Amino acid sequence: MSMKKTNYEERFATTTSYHGMAHIYDGYTSKPIRILWLILTLLATAGCISQCIIIVLNASRLPTRIVTKSVLQNTSVFPSVTICNTNDYDRSSLGTDDLVHLTTVVDSIYGYNIPADKVTAAIDYFSLKFGESFDYELFLRSAGHKLPNMLLSCTWMGRSCSIDDFVNTSTEAGSCFTFNPGTNDIPLKNQTSSGNAFGLRLILNIEQYKYYSGLYVPGRPDAGIRYALHYYKDPPNMISESYYAATGFHTYVPITLEYEKRLKKPWGDCGEQKLKYYSSYSRYACLTELAAALASRACNCSYQEYNASNPCNGLQFLSCITPSAASLRTYLSRNLSICPIGCETYSYSKEISQSSIASRAYVNVLDSFINVSGIITDAQSKNWISSSQPYTRMDFLRENMVYLDIYYRKLDVLQTLQLEDTGFSKVLSEIGGQMGLFIGASTLTVIEIIQYLIEKYFSSQRKIDTKGDVHNASDNHTLALDRSTAFASADA
Image 1 (cartoon, rainbow, N blue to C red):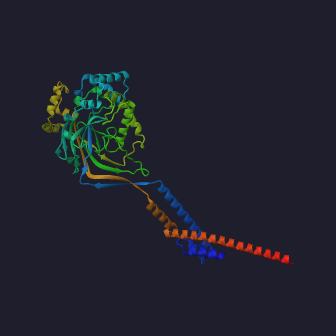
Image 2: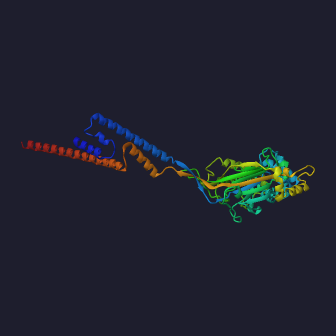
Image 3: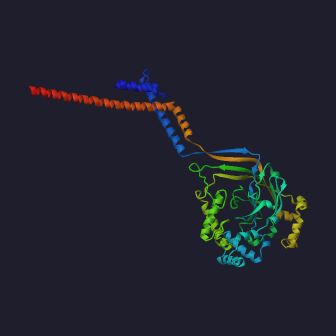
């Protein structure tokens, strides 16, 4: 039996493609060499198994990789450009009492420690003047700076544009105006050539002479234009993604379109939800909608842009909605699972630069097509600018004029893709590589080992059955002898 077993093991060792096994059973090699090959084969096998375990564990963690590439295009969709005056309210649109009480409201909204009786008095004033149906959003638009007064010149792709290319938008920065909003009545604009000559150029008058000092707070000393660039399907984020253009300067904003695609769980952290008041998902839109819904519940009224059921009036907005929504948005933004990052996002990288406007040399040219002198004369006639003190066109340019150029630097898209970095075929190929490196094995080698184990199992089963048959035959023979002996004794 031993000889038969040895021949069986040798047959497997000499026929398998499992490297090292043949050397262990090589009868022409000395015993120390065969022992050495046994040790090497065991170490190689252990190394192969350990590496395969590492590969499987790494694959179970679902790794990803980031691929970045630049894709050149003939045309690129121009971003929506939302511009706001850094001053929320135009004092020429408000009475003296309005300005006094509005100062209290603004200070309260921005978190300054205002006595409760002053806040109550301000709310009571607006309640008495406008009634319970006071619409703060409508008030904000009527009291803010008007685009026809601010927009001195608009050029798009070398052609003239106008206020008809903008829509009025209410944001956290007040009453703003969006160019290229992507609405049905304003066709979406595409830039077909790169460079500032083919982008958007705005010349704006911020009307600093209409600013009211009482509305200014220490944390907001700015005079200029606040602007945000955003994908036309996304709302403008004036809280954390806005920039400023100063007066007396020409601000250049070359941009590059960036597209990011992320993976959903379990591979990534992105996700999307169907929003009620926004056609496209973005994290900022989700946070805004959810914060507004929670604030509406807390204030016992509905504050959604298109929701007419139990709408919040202006007083509820000032006293409850604004502070509640701001704190709720901050709280919700800390948890990515509530409003996850969108799986597909568009953004715009910027390289902002500025140059001072040559006021002394340029003022005559400017006056020839904008009529700065006429604006100054009109402002002095209404006592917005004091006529008792000299006020030149250069003063006006330095204090009120903003030049803003926004354009594509190149018509390409920088794509960033998050891809799965593992899969069945990759795991299989890596395991096959380790098997080939350590023991020279392949899929057929695995089949050979399985075949060997199956034959080994059935061989051992046959041996057990054979031993059982021999044992039974021996017992039967012994029993027959015992019976023969018993019968012989009886005859005697």
